Image 1 (tube, rainbow, N blue to C red):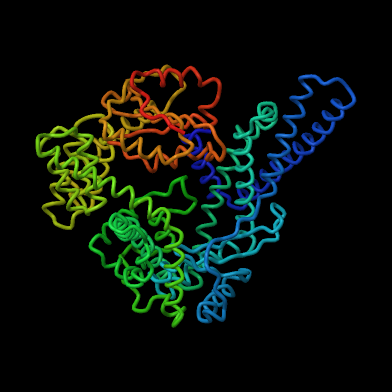
Image 2 (image 1 turned 180 degrees about the horizontal axis):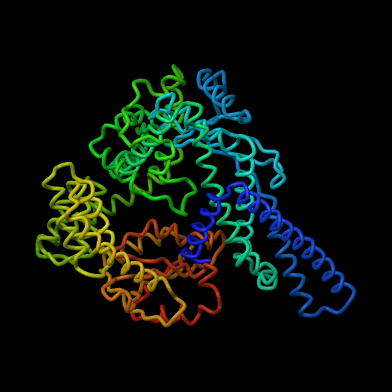
Length: 636
């Protein structure tokens, strides 16, 4: 089922759930039971088919259809058993006992009694800005769960004790009474069937035969159950919020939600980028103490200059099918609390609940973090040395005249990452001065300036973005139009906002049509040479040299009438021969996150099931035949 159909189904089920929540829950349970019955029947049929086929081959003639039956039944049986018997995953974190933190356990027990939730079997502290109840099944789908409560130390540093109590109450609310148990069971059911779908997608020997049996289930039944389960999960998020309101009150719960949103943006945009920027100058993270710094930084983030804007952005986000959690605005409305930037707690929950042991917990998490990131830090340091060499090379070349705009963008990004935003800004200004018509340069400079606390610089950024958005249908048009809308709204320039939203609507429709066309490979295609600069190609080559799985690599440009002014590239990777290959379903995404190109692109791993299909061979051949497409070949 495509995304649009799934969204329509969720909207319809949300209406049904509001009309009669009990009937909706009962029907969802009935669907789950029916699905299990169908899967167990298929399990029995595949086991019998495997036994019968083997007996026929032992005592009768070996024929092709018997071999296919045995392979199909064996493949299906393996997938079903693997999905139904989920392997327990151990939660990550440092165990904490009541003897270590008696005040913390006193709070947990107090909240647990008020919510009526079962006592957690283990409490863990980790380094995330989050809290969660992790249910670990001892017997797979049959249950008998161990309940783990995971608390992030940054979360405890950034919230007051009452706010943390609200977070814990929300998590315990998922375990309380019938609604919590039902939600957890529905979640595990969705997870099991998703694993089954993934297993069938990866199946090779006998896969086609076996999948005929499950085709109806996954095309018609599972998407509808998935939509129902999503609506039920969203509904139960509100029930968990209700538990938090009952235990600590609506105001502390709402303040905690808003504080977490602001602090998450601070960590993502300010704190961790600054930490990783230091990898450029130091080969090892041995001197880094990020959690020690966060002790003061988490409360201070609520008074950061960008904090009001971060909160405003969070309040604009709508609830979506990407996350069962309602949006911040919806959760505040449910609590009947008006949005307001919360003040930092005078005494954080970490100080109040961990007391004199807090320094020890900070030291342990710092040590664990250094151990976990050591290899990545070293790689980042080597990469930074290459980027520093690139900057020096481009500075010399620029002194003799304008350089390729793609190279100029690489220069600006490298300078920003290694030397900070001021250095990146200086490079981008040079690009815009030399090439006023370069949309990518104007876009990146505008996005850098538009959030500046200085009004004049912010106005300049908005002016640059307006110009980019007004240039027609191109890769940056919609994102710039959306950013200008947010900028106008924040400054309450409502007279300009109404007219601007008409342009935004047009750019949204154009971008949606363009992206759908560029990602559609089921109709006649047109490919052209990518025409990337040698330095951009060199950065791609350097990345792939570190990937043992990469054999040959190609890059082409895809064009379409729906995207007339778009520069959209396909980076195509052919696997090298050898053992220890990365997962065919996800490696392309890992590569995509590490590749830096001056325009939108898509990574194609030819080992992915979609591209490995025989039906795609002519299309793959067409892409690889583009003149100059190949830019890399492994020497291994």
